[in-house]
Every structure is written in C-alpha cells, then in structure tokens.
Length: 344
Image (cartoon, rainbow, N blue to C red; front, side, top):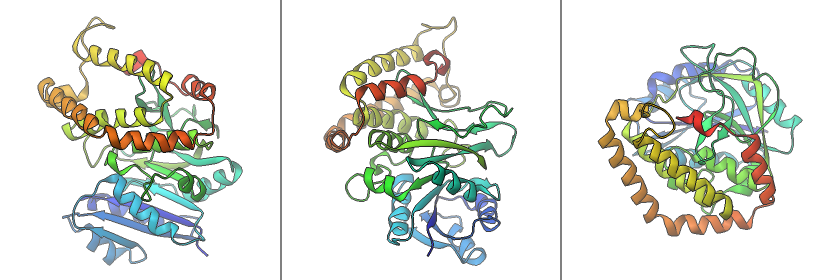
C-alpha cells in the first residue's frame, strides 16, 4: 500500500536529473512511487532514467505539452491508485534533504485542514540564500516568492500558515486536488501552460476552504528558472498572460477592479519614473530590450482576450465552489502581502 507519489515533469533537463533522483533514493521515507513525465525531451533524459533509475515510472510525450499538462498527467496516473493520499510535485532541478518527504508528510498530518505544504526552498549555488518559502501577493495581484533572495538567518523557521505553496517542491493532499480540479482532471490549469499555475491552484484551494502551511524542516536546493531562463521573452509572455488568467478566475468582482487599477499603475511604472527618480528597468528589459518585451506583453494581452470564454466558464465553477467570505479574502490580501512599491 503506497500512499505517496512523487511527480516530476522534465523537458531536456537530463543534466539536473542525477542530483534529483540520487536524493530521492536516499530519502528516510521509502513508501512511495516515482513518476516522471517527459515532455518530448531530445537530450536522452528518458533513456538516462531507464538505465540508472529503473524504479521510476516514465510517461513520455512526443512534444512539449507544458508544465501543467505534464504534471496533470502524472497526478492523474498516481491518483488511479486509491491508496495514494499524498502527491509531491517536484521540479527536476532540485536536490532534496534526506528527510524531506518524511518531514512534509508529518507536517501535513499535523495540519489536516491543509491542502498543501510548502517546503523551504534554498538556492542550489548559494545554499545560505532563500529561493522561496511560500507565495505572497502584491496589491496589483502579482504573486511573488516569499523570502526570495534573503540570507537564511533562521527568520522562516516556524511551521506556520501561509497563503499558498510554490510548486517547486510541494505536497498536495488527494482531497484538496480532487475537490479543486477543473473539468478534465485539470489540477493545474493547462491553459496556463507554465507559470502562475501554482498561484492559480493556491487560490482555488483557499477559496474551497483549504489552508497552506510552511514546513521549514523540509528543505530542498533549487536551480532557479533552469528550464526557461530567468528573463526570457517566453517567460515574460506567460507571466503577464497567466497573471490575468489567475486574477479573472479567482478574485471577487469588487476586489478584482481595485486590483486591476493597481496593475495599471505597475504598467505605468514600466514606462515612466512615477514612484522613483529613475525609471525601473526589469531584468526582462535589460536582457531582451524594451521593444521586444512590449511586443511580448501585447501578445499576452491578445491571448487573454481570446481566452475570455474559457476563463469565464472556469470562474463560474470556482466561485460556485467557494466556501469563504469576501472578508476572508480581504484578510488574506492583508496578511499575506508584499509591499506594492517593493516589487519595482
């Protein structure tokens, strides 16, 4: 009776797999199945796993189906086994502490009201630096990695409630996934393809009445943005597009209008020096150039308009299943926030 499944999606990430799978083999918790979803890799990832980690079940697609579709396929496969109660979603570019899985499951059992458990994600190359300890929200609705870039001085050592979990290394319960999935076994909304899919799921779980907790004893080391790059046009497009998907599906109407007003200010700040003496230059602009980034954003807006019928239908489902008040949503936005002006 295996009650825990590990799901990893991979696209041309062979160079990261040894660290990840070696650390899975040394886990103190052994009662698990491991499923890797290979999204059309051309670097021999699947053959490498078959030769070196034969205990891994491989689901292989001929092309890159995206982060969301890939993970959904793995989750669906895992949940076909009725004994599976926990799903651990992991990026391929991480290394796990030997008691990672044990600590995550113990934390979940201490907090049965939680649908997700957030691990302590540290930088792979600078292990004293934090990569993520949860999701925080700005007034404009953008989501940010809590603690990102901070030196780890023990400031996040409490097992505490957070808004939601980042999907770099997260535990979800079967109950929370089954009660918040969208039609078609759509756990992570596949329309997102990649980025903001974990924020969207965090919102759905919160609205459905589930909580999220940080488990600081469960540590992983992460190569940040290894697959898509830290500041590619690909990333710029999906971040901007999927932000709107997330806000339109999950925010209460009145709060959404205010949130989009703040979002307008954030776009103004990209162009004019409104809040600071010098104009903001994002990593995307520095790397790709303002013109190319502007085109990517406009393309993202075009996709948002084209997808209006889809996310209106999903919004109806999400809001129908909502079990919390608007006041509770306001509390989240107050308690789990990052300063809007600190995001520039």
